[in-house]
Length: 517
Image (tube, rainbow, N blue to C red):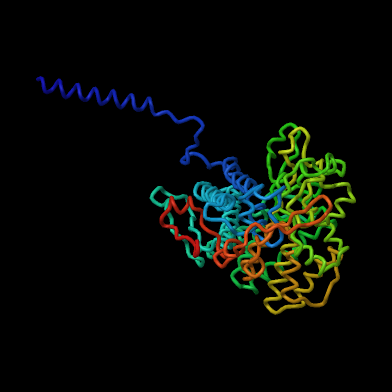
């Protein structure tokens, strides 16, 4: 009898515990359940918008990191060690724990992760859901294009990882390119990507033509010149884009979503919510105002705060002059000389110096109207243009030239030069096409990957860091030498592939570091 009572008591206890457990099984507030979320059109749209936001958040690492690694710019700033990380990038003295490179690397994988969430959870049912999935493939392909072209063989992550998969090894370059091509082809062929109605139409979404341009770049980087030429031709012949008339403002605040823009991150000018556009990028690349005569920038209609990084090298200026002369329209729309800035009233204070070779970027100048007063100098309403039609024309010219069609290459080159008010020709060498791309797109994040792809990075930048140009208030330039050991600065063969971040290597022993690092 006692045994029976014990069994009944245990059964009652188990029932009570089960009842308590069910009462305590309360959904956690503020956390979405993958089993029930992403099922509606509204939730699909929210999921893909997170990819757009992740792209926008990458602009500072993208602009500073990629431009510092070129022969277009000096690190800049007010003096030596003003920003040692940026100087290290510019002079190729960095190691595996370089902050901007780690920021780029992790940001690209952040985009890939969010794209994989869309592809893993958003149903393939309604048109909005299908469009979200197509756009996710474009974002994933874009991120992998960037990773492959700079790191070579990063881990291939084509789905949300289980904990057992976190330590992924390097992918192979072949399988990575195959994923890029597959994603872009499926997105393009889906018929769901947005297309503008005409060149003056505006859209904030990634378009079919943006996806086609990425696919063309992937082909070109792999040496598939004929395939690249064909797809670039299709974009050009669509008549959905044209070159913006005013080159001086082609990426300016006043030309948001212009007829040339193929994809850009949108910033809404909302005086009631200005801090949505918080960024320090425009301050980093605007003129070093604490070294300039008080109020000279604002008197010239320019924003009154900046830190003066990324100043043009003379050899970039010289390439402009080779194409269009010292008074060239595009040259003067892109940069100003010391004397030109002085004529506008922008002068260096006596006793102050800049890391500068006598040239100042004008194309990305920051005006007083694009920095809302209510949001302080840390708010910028300018959109980030990730690709414009001029790049497609230049990529197409290169693809055709490499494929033996010099006539078509010249046609596209002359479209660029006509807008630039530069001399046109009936034929162009591949070196002329490369120079044209350098000057037309300078500062827009394409140069470093081109130098790597063309195999000329070491030739162009092996001595970068051998001196630092110091500009004083009279316009005199001193070439200051800080390092006499050539083995410790300048582009070396190991820089043809960037290092995987030290943090990634320490956390993931399955990643094999790139040679020389």
